[in-house]
Length: 502
Image 1 (tube, rainbow, N blue to C red):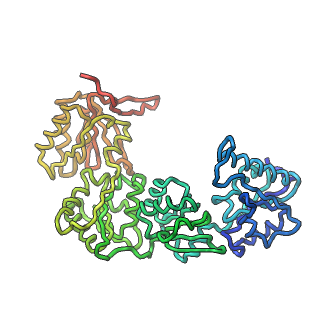
Image 2 (image 1 turned 90 degrees about the horizontal axis):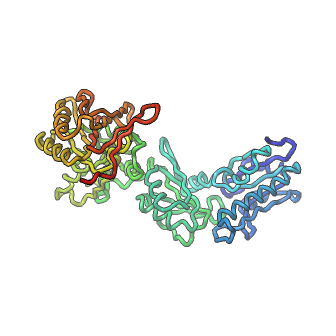
Image 3 (image 1 turned 30 degrees about the horizontal axis):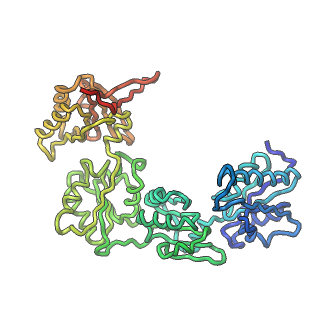
C-alpha cells in the first residue's frame, strides 16, 4: 500500500539528447523535485544529467547512481547480472530513504523511462510503495526516423524494435519477417547486426543513425559504416517500404521465390516466407492462396485458376526476366504437391537459365494435420496424392498397396473433389486388404482455417461423403495408437518410434 505521507517519485523521460526535446512536464517535474537521481558509468559522466543540466538548481540534492560494471567482467559471486541486481537494490534503498523523509525524487532517464531505460529497475522496486508518476519522453527510435527524414512505418506496416544483443540468427529471422525495424544497442554488437541485415537480404535498405539530435550526430547507409567507429548510442533503421524505390524493372535484378504459406493464414508463415512476401514487387498464385497475403501498396498481384500451374510458372519467370522480384505463392509447402515443381520445370528451359529461383519451405498439410491429432507420423510414413489428374489411378493403387504392405503410415493428399468422388472409397477398400478395420484414420479438414475439423474414425468407417479437396487423411499403421484421455474423452493418435522386432 502506498504511503501518502512520504515523498513522490518521478520517472522523467528526457528525450533523445537535445534539451529542447524535453517535454514541459519533464521540466516541471525536475523543478518540483528535491532530489535528482541519474545513472552513470564509473567515469561519473551522465548523459541524462547533461540533458537536464539547465534545469538543475544549486539546492537540488544529487544522487549519482554509478554502475559497478557496464560491459566488463566482474568477480561478483552472482556474475554480471548478480552485480547489477545488487546495485539496483542498493540504489532503490538510497532513493527510498529520501522518499521516506518526505522528499520528492526525480529519476532522470534518456529517451523514455519505460523504453529500454534504467529507470524501470527503480520503478519496479519503489512504485508499489510510493506515489509515482512516469513522464514519457521522445525515444531514440522517433528521433532517428526524424533525423533520417523518411517515414518509419506507414499504413498497415509492422514495426519491430530489436536489441542488437540478440543472437545473430534470431536477428536475421526477425529482420526477414518484418516490414520495418529499428535495432538498438549497437556498439560492440554492430558486426553481428550488420551480418543479420545482410543474411536477411535487407542490408541495402538499412540506414544508420548515431547520437540522434546530439552533438556528433551521424547518419548514413548501414552498409558503409565502419564497425570500429560505432558507439553504443546508435541505431540501425529499416524505414518504410511504401513508396521506397524497389530494385524492379531492371534486367538482371529479378528473381523468383516460390513460397509456402502453410495450410491456412498468417500464424503458419515462417519468418523467411514473410520476408520474401514483403520484399516482392509482384505476387503470382492461385487466387485462394493470394487472398491469404495482405495487400501492400506498390505490389502487383496476379491471380489465376488452380489448374494452370505451368502457365503461372512461365508468367512469373517472364516477370523476373524483366527485372521484377516475384513471389510465387503456394499453399502448404511448395515442394509437396505444389508450385515448386511447376516453376522448376519451366525454369529448367534454356531461356530462363539465368533467372535465380529460390524455394522457401512451408508447413505442409500432413504435418499440420498430424500435430492437431497428436503424432501419427511419429514413425516411417508415405505421402501419396489420390488425384488421378496427372497420373493414372493404376499407379496410385499400386503405390497404395506397396505402402500398405510395408506397414507405413499414409498421408493421403487430394482425396476428393466435385469431379473426383470415387477415389476415397477405392483407397479405403484397397487398404482394408492390408489393415485391420480398427486402424485409426485421421480426417483433417481446413486445418488452421475457420471451418477446421479434425476427428479420428476406424478405417472401416471412413465415409467418402465426408471427404473433399480440403481434407487430408492420415491412415495409421499396425502400430498406431488411438487413445481417449481424461473425463473430456479427447482423443490422441500417435505412432510409436520403436517398431517391434520380427
